[in-house]
Amino acid sequence: RREAWDVHAIMQASTVAGAIALWVQHQLELASCCAEMEPLVAALAQWHARIESEIHARRREVLAKVREVEPTLEEAKEALRTLDRRSLTSFRQQIDPPEAAKLAAQAALLVVRPEIDHWSWGEVQAALEDP
Image (tube, rainbow, N blue to C red; front, side):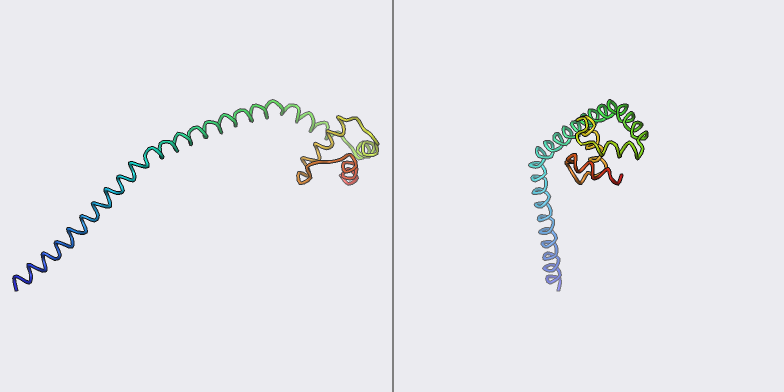
């Protein structure tokens, strides 16, 4: 009976030792994979830092340009507040208004109706019929 217990204990110990050996082997493989991945992870971290830096630099540029044009935009908004229906009707009825006036109307419509990416003068006139 003692011999049977010894065989059973040896079998359990062998199973446990095998499981530990397998775990150690997996840990070593994982460590090896991690070591192989370190250069890739480092390269990705550098790339990420460079992209973040470029994004922040571009954001600063865009915000500087926005601050630069804000006064002009405010002037344009103020000028638009002075328009009345009679002025719009007069403008709409012009056959060939000054190019700057057409451009301003087209730009305003692009802002209001961005789904249309180009406005002909006829389309501007039609849009101004029902402002």
